[in-house]
Image (cartoon, rainbow over all chains, first blue to last red; front, side, top):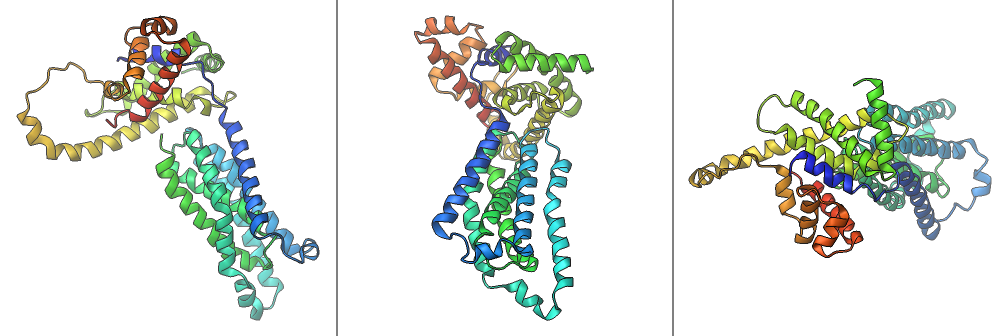
Length: 212
Length: 178
């Protein structure tokens, strides 16, 4: 079969048109959020003092930083799932959440006396927090990896890692409602561990699954 | 590549995505020229046939055409696919050459087949199920239309389209790996 013969076959197959990649991503993200919320409500639910906590700066900050991570990762993932996706632009989108978190950690270190730092850092839930965020994030990560297979990432491993960050961002934003450890020092350690774990799983899976 | 070529490519691709077979054929022929130039520039030593890269890239363009944003220029997308497929081919070739060293003795003992040109795509075509293979061969090598193929093979046009679509997807998956 020479190239002109191949072109005849490809042109004859013009008809079936699949959904645009943009549509696929919005659908996958909506489904990932819905599944994460369902798992959360079925297993954990909000913390008992949610009404009182909702007005505090530290609680609100946790939601803001995790939403920032999720939004940045969503933009980066959509860019990286296309062959011409620019790695630098994508990475730039991902710097916002770490920058916010670093600023909050600095503010916390200035605001509270040093002898309370270890206690705030370790909190009550620590390892459980990491495990639960990862648990909530696994189903969203699977959904996002399936969507990534419909894309054509030039670097499947990196795109998979960003899918892990997005799954982590979604899971963490939801888990925040349950978590009673509000210090940025706590968030910087235990949430980061969970999200990094999901990113590793995403990278390892995608370098196999999302090859094309 | 100047901007009028770029906008013509984008116009053809938009028509193709809307289902215009003729525009799609035009688009693919232009794309093949661009990728051929790219592959010949990049492959300086032997070992990989640039035309294999052209064919593999065209298949990837076809399977992944929904990843093009219809408000974005076509050529960056197209060259990114070609680059990905070229790197992939170099990687596979590296692996195959290691295997080949072990097989030299065996191969030397066999009589050399007289093949003028061995297409990677033909190996992928041969690995298809017989039904898909005869449909793909009828439309490509024999240049038949969908309706001619349907009546020649005693199939419905829908069944021919499905077999063609699945056959091409399977070729794209197996290209160069057979």
